[in-house]
Image (cartoon, rainbow, N blue to C red; front, side, top):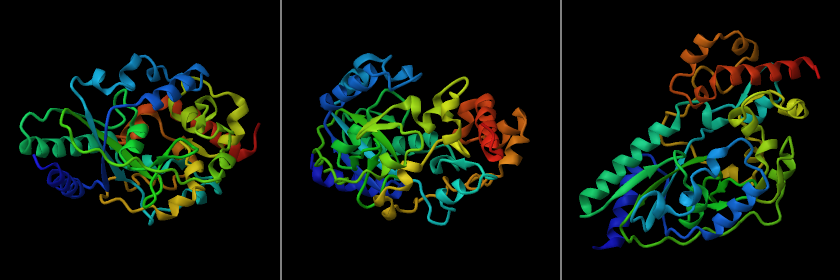
Length: 318
């Protein structure tokens, strides 16, 4: 098998499907495993029990998918320069700020389908090619894998950064049993910059590469169930789903690329939604307006909780 020619073909197919970059990594995630263990021991995962309930499967790909020896990692850009900047919404308390990745179609199904299409094309070329695809859908260390595959480096805010695209992209993986040539690991380019750490509204980035999810607005508005501690209400401001502040200030995001698809363009004016209008939605309206959106998964109760905090902040209530 001419693997160089195959990699070139995989890159071509991936580009046709809308992916922006392809890399290959091995399955040695021992360094990431130590970091994950330390993070969990500190309780930084909060209510996200899924981060450790699968045992060592997350850091040992061959345990999750038998015979895995390589991982194809792919980048899929989701930003659009035509969309109103996130920082502009934060300045308008009558508006609701939604993380830029969640304004359009839910990426899970879309990217998984494209990954399967790509994998099937590879399977037609290689006899004995077995695979399983993932995109934020199983115990997979996708950021560590992406770094090893050369997609980008893990920044101090724990997101993956690419020199040509910043950090506004999704990741997808294809676990496989074929000994593809391994890509060069991405090098670190944050230098002495601490803008992401300094910009975090709740000081959730407690140290470089260490995010205490229990303080993170993305976690609090999406993953956290029940009441959000009052100590964070004011800092949440008008953020009702996720938080992009650490990415917003990252110098590398001046290089962000427009997505190759239109699926992630804003729906229901989610780039600058009116806070009062969103508060008027009952559960039926919420389910209808968020159909096919990643926002739906938090449920109506959490949606209302987030909106009410934003509304009280608008009124200047404590």
